[in-house]
Length: 290
Image (cartoon, rainbow, N blue to C red; front, side, top):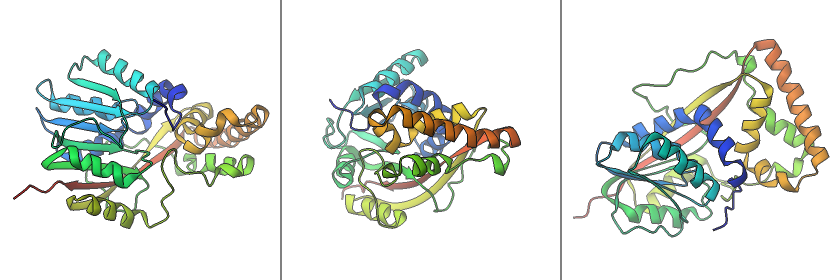
């Protein structure tokens, strides 16, 4: 099975950094679902399985937490980390979100964290199909702007000076060195041109979900060095990750050197760098049949 988003070669690095920079988003999404012990949960486009494993810790051995993804590398990392944690009720499979291999009404909760869905309408229809009536669905896309989800136990934000936050620096350098990448879509997903809040609400309504609400959350992760910041940006930024192997190696060296120089100026001045991950969440329920 082909990984269209090309995570295979960077799966280990992606997992290491996402557990630092994205876990607060995961905690938010998981709390939002109201997941409880003994339930069955499906994590679509699970990546390295961070959300799936967090769900396994909640549902316990009497439940089931299943993650599916198109990247063999991500599934390999997810399975390995799950075994290390002893979650034998965790399962990971290579599977296409367009054709979920589960029966109708199989899961109490279905989640998708930053999924790259090539046909969102069809994928959402599949997720709706496998969710039990009365079950909860939650998805998060990049962005924000909706009301902030009031986490019961919000992760502490690192003390990073505003000047040390380098959000946008990677894209600035990309625009200077590889301008053709700026207009590329987020991985395998099509470009969303409508208002993201309106688009997400419409998608969930059209899929059949009820009691829809939108929330936001953002977390700024600390980075000790410019090298670390570059490594995280280079694996999380889809346009660059997917094109890197085809780029001129000498140009990549110049690009990286330029980023490191600019980030180091901030590091020297403020002592710590920050990179923010922001999420727009959509949540809904599958109506109970009469």
